[in-house]
Each structure stands twice: as structure tokens, then as C-alpha cells.
Image 1: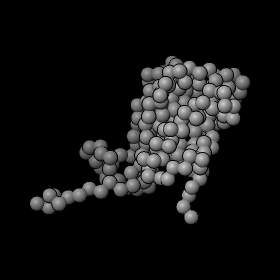
Image 2 (image 1 turned 90 degrees about the vertical axis):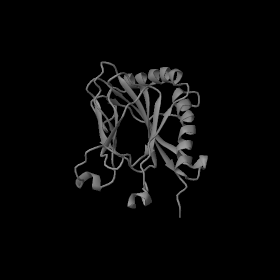
Image 3 (image 1 turned 60 degrees about the vertical axis):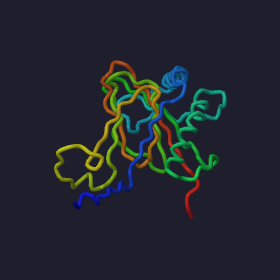
Image 4 (image 1 turned 30 degrees about the vertical axis):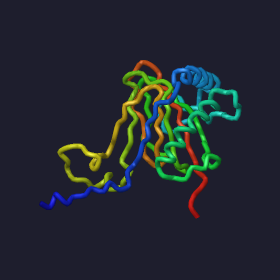
Length: 206
């Protein structure tokens, strides 16, 4: 039969690497304090993908004794693993965290889908993620998925246009910066706190 010779080639997949941050409870307690202090010092913050809520300015991670520096340093092993999983050459000195910030989303706040230009990888880390705080959404970046698709009778990896990930405290997502992503509305009465950061890899091919 013809199906006996079938071979399915899964070309150009879109990876999202999900890690459970080691010792996340201890980190999250100190990170929460740091982020809420930033919020007190700068009530206005900045407006980016957030609709409602509070978006911090960039973290200052130069102080090696600070929790934000220790967190940034701890993330490197996960970022390095993602780079090696891609099959890219890992040169640690050429892997740069270009920016890191936090978002506090209260009830009914959310983040519209967006991308992070001018970097290679982006990441989202969950400091606080109460029940019903909203799923992390990822949109299919292939252009054909946005304007031309037949009716489907079951969801598969080939016809999916939007994926929604359940997240918990201590989860770290690392993904290509071009991947459209967002966060659903927080339906909880508690804050959702996310730290995001961008990674630039300065070893491009000539």
C-alpha cells in the first residue's frame, strides 16, 4: 500500500523550552520584594505590551550582591541549554542579556501578543502565578496560518494557530524572540508577576 512508504518530515519547528527554575521558592520571595520596591519607587513604570498592570523599567543588574544579578546569573544555565538544543555554537562571553524587566498584572490585566525585535531569544519567568491568572499564549508565526487555512476536524501540530500554556510559579520559558506571544487576562484576585528578558548572541555567521 502507498501508506507503507509514508514519511512525515517535520521541518522548521518553533521551539518553546520550559524549565522549572531550581530553588525557585527562595528566589521568588526575594524577587517579589525587589519588584514591589521598584513599583513603590516608580508607580508609573512604562507602557509596552501590558494592558493595565505595571511594567517596570529595565533592571539594574550591575550590583553582584543584588537578587536581580543573582537571578540573571542563575538563568544562564537554562539559556545555554536552549542554545545547545538549537545546535548553535555556545560561546558564553558572546551571550548577552540585553534587557530584563518585570510586570505586575492585577485582576483583569493582560499582555497583548507581541514579539521582541533586535534579539535572538526571549524569556518569561513566573515569580507569582496564582490559579486563574491567565495562560501564556503563542501564535503560529507562519504567514499562511493567518490568512489561508482549510476547516479542520481535530487539532494537530500542523493546523494549530494558537497555543495556550498553563504556567506555575518557578516556570521559565525560553523561546525565539520572533515568536508572537502574550498572556491572557488575570482572572485571579492576586497579582501575577513575571520577569522577562532578552538574549543577544553575538556570534553570527559571516
